Length: 572
Ligand code: NAI
Image (cartoon, rainbow, N blue to C red; front, top):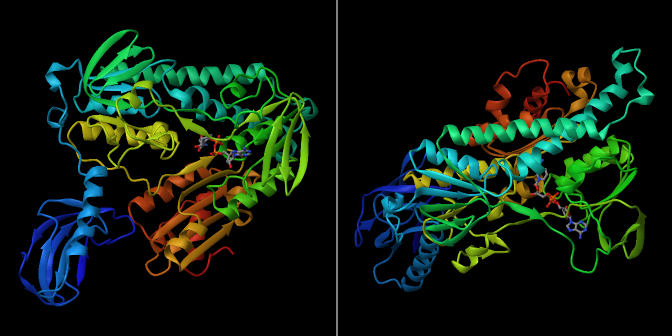
């Protein structure tokens, strides 16, 4: 018996559409004979039978789109028992139709209890962060009558308490380091011993940058004729949102309510004030010392900031290494460089008590203590879900709203994007999801591709990656090729005075498909966009190696890493 499935024709192929059948149930078929044709976003291809037999069962009709590996047909001998296989295939297809069936065509036809014309809006977006405001703009661009509610400030955590203010802080530390190291570049006449950060001015600069971006977002929403409602919104029905005691009807609702910082289990923290990623950004004075609980992205960015500003920094991380999602080799290089800056990093360390004067923890069976008055908690974030979502029966898992690739929740017409769905808590993921959700509401069929979403860490040098780590690639593909290029051999890095780091690429062994790119170098967070574009376009290692990169640039290190994966870097 052969169960014919939707084939995976490339690493980035997630689904295909069956365009035409050449056989019907009961037809005999020979090995190598075309059974049906499929269409992907890249190609059209005939799928052939791999054994002789009879087409006993067809599961999919012409025009239907399903994910790769789902069953399409069963070929078996006449009289061969196929009942169990049919049952199993139908169960797989049913799971798909519940969780990932194609998008409903348009709000008016999407099975909701009100028609679009009876609504105040076609789309109501709750939350004005990088997910929500982008979704609202896209929806408005597509001609939908759109409203957005925001309870604090447009731009959400990213603009107000996350990405942008943190990067403003880090830019100040970079300027301080440049000032302190000015003599190395031939600059004289600067009393570097007096160089220090004035937090009041750092804060003022941060506020100016944030203010400009927040008003820019508001201006964009207005320009696109999105109705702005300031206030805390709640979803009270699948077509109803309340804000400031007013009720609004909407054909579709997008939940873009973000996330909030997590804490430690009850009883551990016995200290009145513990900094979070929100409050740390409001500091008016720099601490002399600080303990950071959590060696993830937030913990490491702030460790770098405070150490650069002159504080004694300790990081306590629960797992055996810092930056758990980062490629292990790169994370180890980062650890070494942070240690060289004087940051104490404790890994495999379980925090047991946080008091006014100390952080206590256990490491390798030993009780340890860091004496400190300042503690930053950076142990992750948890999705924020509006109170009414639960009453409405919107499905959640592990505290996050469950969504499919089209960002639909379990309630028709209600979508959830960004941190609220917990898939990837990154501003750029939220924005991409916002576009996908808005397009589906407008009747397009848009599916989110999570495969090559980049991540970025803004210490110096920067860390950026896309795709699989070496460990994950080896587990998934077995035989892979690794190409590495150390930055000390890169001209531009030497010119800029920072040649630490590594460019590392992972490719599939046979065809050279790019599985992962990991950069620890200057400008890594910008250069990673090349890798993302290449992966999205299904470029191969040979194509990137052959693409002429400008000289002198740090991007040459990426090209060299691909040369290395193909057999040898030129400059090593
Ligand atoms: P995270 O999940 O990146 O890291 C939290 C860390 O805390 C993990 O390493 C975890 O093992 C550790 N941890 C958890 N419980 C602990 C305990 N009891 N004791 C010691 N360590 C413990 O979360 P983080 O850093 O708070 O960031 C939150 C979110 O914000 C993440 O999704 C992150 O990707 C995002 N973010 C992204 C940034 C960027 O793109 N540059 C910057 C800042 C945050």
